[in-house]
Length: 271
Image (tube, rainbow, N blue to C red):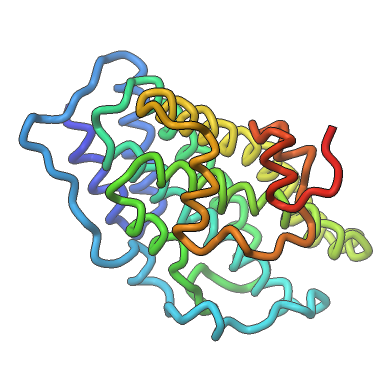
């Protein structure tokens, strides 16, 4: 089996059932076989995200504000935004395997498991969207994560720093804040369903960031770099000065961040 052909198909497909089937095939194969790419394998650079056929892509500044969660439309915009992040994360996890074939089998399996998790997250949110009367693609989206993957396609060290250790880690900061805003509406069945989904996503995203942390540190060791290179990378991508009003110290520590790092990111206290 050529898993790289299957991964390419999975990344390009806009059908979640296809992504799921191919991801599970690759994961089952990698759990039982050593895998290496052909010597002349050159990963494809994808011109557009797989959701481009379903979604209207706009600049992030043009996205409507999500404030009113009392209506189906208001709640729908929130669920759609989270579903979009999870959908994007599927392709990013698959691309992490596809684009960097020289990494060890443990790396390949880690990111295929992440893709499997993200598929499950997306399907939970898609089901909730259906119950609200919407489908994925009914609201505009931005392609920030796709762009970040494109910008880090040349360097796995930068990919691990930017995607799991920056963007996914930022999700650990935001998730509890969303749950807090929804808490007084949790008697509504669909709101409770969303809170339950967010709780599952939160716990599993800690594991995803931890995997990113593990492979970031592995690459630092391989390349003879100090782990402080993380901040150099954030500065290179103009992310170091981003305001972080709700830095989730406990979750980030669980996901591999040190107190020294967290204080540099703005944490007032860390023990």
